[in-house]
Length: 320
Image (cartoon, rainbow, N blue to C red; front, side, top):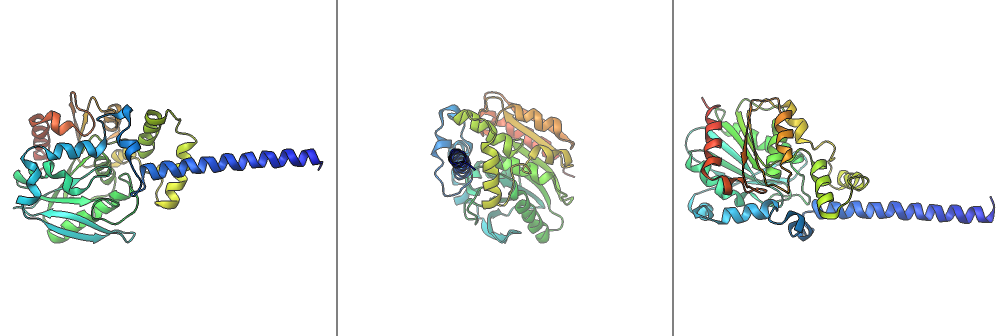
């Protein structure tokens, strides 16, 4: 091999290594930005392309309004814990009521169970027992990453088993908002006990890949490939799951749980078009509700009585 050839080859390999290194740097950056529990999320929460469309920052503001804000101060609850299949200690708030009907209320991205007190207040006043889990990596639950509703589905199934172990006659409704809605849909795609009678998903996304692809375009005007491919590899290494498997749209195809699909038509964080994609893919008994003028996680606020009346009437159809 001649000297010039060696120099050219060395230069090419150096450029290739630099290119690969840059891609992995970008993939690791995206992982930290979106999924690392400890990483600063300001780039997401203050992005002008999704102004006032922020997942649970918006949801938290809603829950601070009105007399529901002191729900945790006025109604007795207990802290309950269980271990995940992979050894994390998970936490939930449990509110006891009368009868056998339970609602599991699932929070969204970077939120926690206690910030869902507006929803908790409504369901409690309807007579339901409540369980408000902190998803892994949130609130009092262990975990240093955000699972985007995928590994969380297995955790919620364990919470379902926990409720059944304490009351074999329990009837369970699943309710989630944003990432919590994706979690609920992912749960319904698994084999569930007959105790789970209905599910409500509010502004959930079709898949983790599609969600991140949309956000990459909105926030940075970048294509999904190759950046998400590399971020996916990093996620598999650091968090133990794959974007390619975290697909609520595939889970609802397998679901037999009656599901109410809800979305605001002004949602720019989780695109409104995902509502019909999910609804059309679902093979379970299903209904949908569009809240006009609602952005992301604003359906309860904007919809008001229409929102809750639809949810309550939907649930009643599947109660004995």
